[in-house]
Structures are given as C-alpha cells and as structure tokens.
Amino acid sequence: MQYLSPSSLSGEPIVTTLDKKAIQLERKKLFAELELSGETTIEMNGRSFTKNDIIQYYEDLLKEDGLKYHATVADDPVLLVFLETAHIGRKESFLKNPMYTDAQFINWVSPYFCHAFITFMNACFLDPDEDGLVALLRNKLLMTQADTEKGWQAVMKIVMGSISTLEEYYKSTGEVKLAKAKDLMEFRYIRLVQLLPNDRFGPVKDKYAFSILQACVFTFNRNRQTGNYVSTWLENAQLLAASEEVIAQIAKKREELEAVLIPQESGPVYGGSGAGAPAQTSPWGVIKLILFIVLFLVRLATCRHW
Figure 1 (cartoon, rainbow, N blue to C red):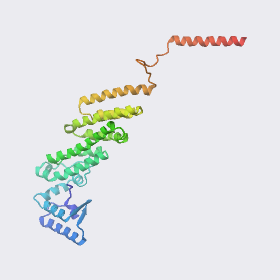
Figure 2 (figure 1 turned 120 degrees about the vertical axis):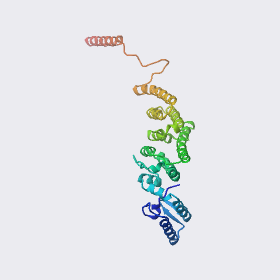
Figure 3 (figure 1 turned 120 degrees about the horizontal axis):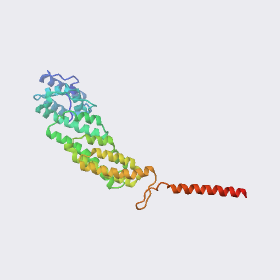
Figure 4 (figure 1 turned 60 degrees about the vertical axis):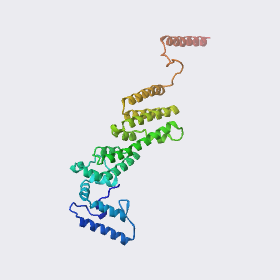
C-alpha cells in the first residue's frame, strides 16, 4: 500500500487543526473535478485513483487519530519522502519522535512503510546502493511484526534468487553466462548482503558464500587466465560468510589457488613427480664454462699462428 499524504490530494500543506468539515470539503472539490473533467480516475504521484479509491482514502483520513498520524509523517521530511517515493539518501535519518514507539501509530503506518521497504530493497539490489541501505537500517523500521516478516521475506527472495543464478551458472554449463554470475560476486553487490542482519540472514550468507566458492572453482577450471578475478571473488565470499566453518573452508581454497597462481606469475611450472624448479648453477658449472672458454681461445690463437 503506497502512502499518499493529504497534501498530495489537496495541493496544500497539511495542518493539524484541519477538521472534519474541511476534509469533507476537500473531498467534494475532488469529486467535482472528476465530474467536470469527465474522467473516471485522477493521477497523483504517478498513481491512478478511482472515485472509490478517493472515498476510501477520505474515510480512513476521517477515522480517529488518522489526521494526527498524517501530520506526524508530514513533520518528518525524510520519513515522508521514504513513504511516498521509497527513497532514502546517504546518512539521512528519521526524526526522534516519541510517536514512533506508539503501538497504534505503528499499526497505522506499517502497511505504508512495508510497501516502501520492499520497493526500496528491490531497487537497492537492482542497482547496488550501499549508502541507502546503510541509512535505512540505521533507522527504526516502523512496521508491525507481521509486516517486518513480510519485508524481510521479500529481501530473502532477492538473495535466494541470486544464489540460484550462481548455482545455475556452475551446474548448467552455458545456460548462465559468466558476465551475469560475475555481477553477483562483485563487492558492490556482496556488500549489500553482508549488511543484512546476521540473526536472520546468517545461514543464507553462508549458502551464498559457498555458492561463490563453487562458481570460482568452476570458472578457474574452465579458464586458468581468470585466476586473479577468482581470487578477488573468493575474498568477497570470505568476507560474506557468517560461520567460522565456511570462512575456514574458503580460506583453504584461497591458499590452494595462490599456490597455483604464484608459479604462473613467476615463470613456467615444471612438471614431473616431485619435480621443482631447476637448481641454482653450481660452482663446478662455472669453472667448466671458464675452462671451455680458455681452451677455445688457445685453440683459436694456434690456428691463427698456422
């Protein structure tokens, strides 16, 4: 349920002294505009409202404390923008209003807040917005327990969808391209999942981190030239993991990868059972080389003499 302030309908700032007669007058004016225009709907804030929508809206507004609650929202510019547009800027905060702990106010604002919360989260993960997510999670989430659960379930669906995409990538060759999987392993995206509360998302973070590990192994085995990218993605996975067990598992895989990458970076890897890099040149080898050069020069001088 998207929030719509009374000022959006009337075009005038909301005032706490507005009485029922004034509200009813505004409703009549809107209905008159609809009749004169011949339209069946009215557009406000990018939404279409029918006559029945407007009737229901004003009925809710005329309920006990309805106008007071709207006035509370109007007094908080950050909360008002969040409810109307599902946007919150970097370091923005709601006001410290005692009303935000009032159970009746929470019940009233919760459906609007939940709608904005879910809309914001979808947009935030679609175009990673760490600043916005940090700002929102630092504020009090003005939702009932049921709406809070609904909101977090929507976020869970987003994260599990990302995990499924990674699993499809390393399980079904060719169906999901590396470019798509890559975006889900980059730090900008992983950071959003990392910021989610551990008490609810801890096991999912481990599952996501393990999926990244599997995707990295699959990628590196297909193309050894991706080693540096894989190393970065494994580091992101290690930062994401919530349990010590998964962290240790990823750390071990990173060590194995580094052991493979270092010889590649310094030169060719010498094969063979137990074979290592060639031994350093011994002193006898140097002496033999000098003797060979001396003999060669003597022989050359002899040839010239003859």
